[in-house]
Image 1 (cartoon, rainbow, N blue to C red):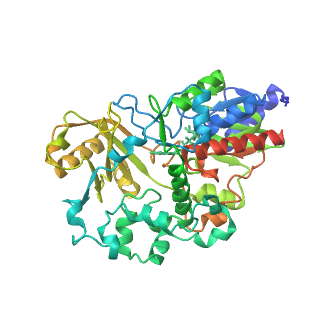
Image 2: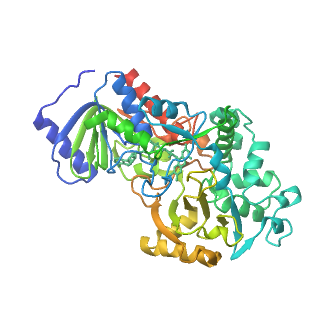
Length: 480
Ligand SMILES: Cc1cc2nc3c(=O)[nH]c(=O)nc-3n(C[C@H](O)[C@H](O)[C@H](O)COP(=O)(O)OP(=O)(O)OC[C@H]3O[C@@H](n4cnc5c(N)ncnc54)[C@H](O)[C@@H]3O)c2cc1C
């Protein structure tokens, strides 16, 4: 695993060429490692540790000024709510292992989950009480589904009629590819019409912007895998004490000066037995191998030379992503105790889902509110200047429930869609993309190896990120 150094002149010539390719400003210096990792999110950090444990000299370059990527804890807000990766499932073996290894304490927050679902339904400007829903004119459901609040049919159908059953890993087996159709088509096959789909999926959808742009096979995997997490005994959902970001922070700290912040990569070149990354500030990092954890929606803005061909290149260019913006609010007074309404709101407007955060002393104490603007609602919020968006959110809540007037303050705001290092929340496999991309998405390209939650096969979210970092590290170890 010795690094072969080239002359400084040769290096500068090469670096200048990359800068020209990448359109970067003039270069300042070049740093060498055996393996260069782009991204100090969970996947990149896991890859870095696994490689370092195996004796490899690693360097991590991170575009932001912090570690954690899409794990971001708002420690200025009571209860340290998460603006990114939230629940750590009972089966998140790698996350739990990393927390233990890097001495981050985990707490079981499963008893707090019910409070998050204490919410009122708001359609148009109308608050519709649960007791009135079954016979309400806006209820588009038929048969027994009429009794269900709009957020119930999706998880229920995806539990009772999930074509993968408990075999969530079958999602990448060719025998499942018949299900790589749109969620809208899958819903229609279950007897839902467009009005029912509009409410059951397109309003506050977890994945994609609508049921038409997400693969039912991916959603089946999400629910089959999620149900498996919930079925593990003893039942638990964990969070790091002080916020989940404590985990990547501790992992990055353990790597010391091998992590370089504010290094936004704009170009990567792989040739022969070398690879190099050019940063926006003109610095160049050179290695034998590179592990790239950049989400594909953000990787579209990085020049890769030579271009990634075929289905993998198409995946980088076209894989789906969802816009997601969060507004975090703190209440000066518990207004929900005075208006007879549940603390949260589930709306079909720009507010999206207003969720009470139960992270006070007791599981029923509300420490803050997180407003999840998803998909088109996020895009609408993102078009406003941030200060206007914050005022808009408060005004909307006050309009819907006057008891909140003057009692809410915005303490946090995060747009994942406009953040150039994520360009959205998580990867969305669109109809047909599982079949087309699953075997290609994580293939090495020259000396570039790919990791990140979008490349995970057996897990999703934070655990998927960890799984992918581990896999990429193994690939590299076998190739050097
Ligand atoms: C709001 C929200 C809620 C979530 N909730 C959950 C949950 O409850 N449970 C769960 O398991 N998961 C959840 N997730 C998903 C989870 O947080 C992610 O899947 C996981 O953190 C992704 O890790 P990653 O390493 O793949 O990517 P990232 O964390 O995005 O890491 C990639 C890193 O690369 C860096 N980077 C990007 N571009 C460049 C560049 N050009 N140059 C240099 N560096 C660059 C980024 O800054 C980042 O640090 C949630 C995510 C969000 C946004």
